[in-house]
Length: 428
Image 1 (cartoon, rainbow, N blue to C red):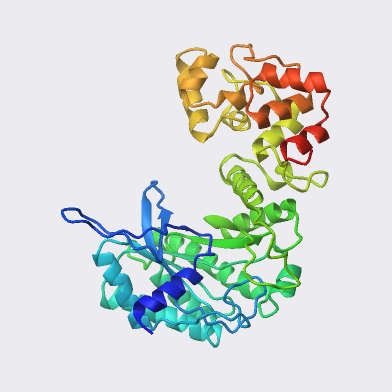
Image 2 (image 1 turned 180 degrees about the vertical axis):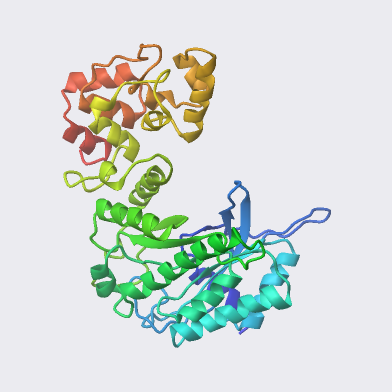
């Protein structure tokens, strides 16, 4: 099997990892032009300063000793198998790098024979890149659950970022859908990586030349929709992971039916992409807006609203908090207003030092007044009437129509919130 044949198989097998997105574009440079693009294996990630970075996203091997029901690389699935030798993958990475296809490597793998053996293959690959080829580009490596702690530590010294896939939101679902995996095998390396990062940070305060351990932090991924957990359970788990393991990101992957299994949703089921999107929105509220998981969802509402983003939904359910006066509210209160983000909240604090703000000035500062107008006052004045009931407010926020039109339609038909939800989701 040629290197390109292996690349085609192993880059395609890696596409279900949600930690970055594949470009899928192939383009050769024309006469007089510069630059190339490679379709298979090239994906994009983003640096802390917002730059887009091209990565070679590939598996070391798609041969797997495990039989996880949701995985296209499961042991019992009839699919072409391939494995890169460490030298092959290191040379391929350097070839792509020299041609300016990529700036780094995203490396994962199926479990070849055992977790330890697979980690040894990955470590040899990264050792060749770092030590022999002197590759200084970005490397994201997936740790294999169940591998020896010494191997995890060695991989962390070679990679910029590491991740351990949590896979499913509960131990029960993991046991049912991935019987070869154990929850403790996932959490143990995650805890080891977190401790190693903290130890390195402490040592750097004393010794500036301390070898870096996973300097870009760690992340994880969960599959959404393959198991029965509610959005509240997933979000509560996310908050606990951020707090205990200091993760940089939790990625959510909408379950895509790729193999038939009685334990999984039918192959005809569409991926729950809206649910994945809502989780990312809520994740943002946890990390940057000061919300807690229990605020976003509770026992009465354990799943996201089908029509409203999580922040709008919280605002609709907490009318006692509003309206917020933008000329007096503190930063934390401004962040609770739908349509005001981190950047626009800071701009408001800066701009109001020079005088009171009005609705037009808020628009210029980046506030999305289509949403914010229902929840704030500027100089004691609201841009719209404050007499909307709950159903009218949901209709105005979800439909994108003007207030008057939404109010007239709701009033004319005497629409309830349940009727509105069914109507806008195509149920009636």
